[in-house]
Image 1: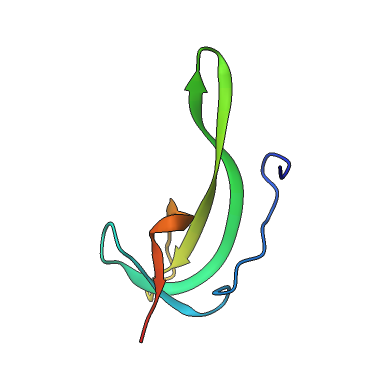
Image 2: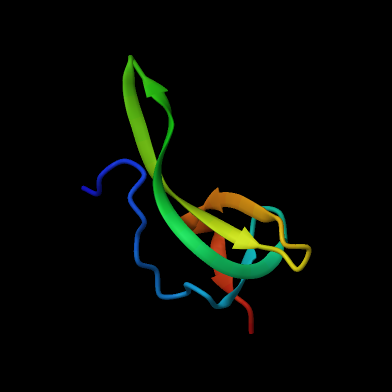
Length: 70
């Protein structure tokens, strides 16, 4: 299990991607293992992907929600 807030390798890093939840397109800049909530007082962690849009802003989304742009 990765450490909290550890940067993870992903095959689409620096590639054009789409967030399937919002339709946002951009470049995958990072995937970070982050706390997303707590269950019965125990922190829950998931990989969060950061997509940089053409405007320069970055959108966080679940890493499982990204797909490569064709």
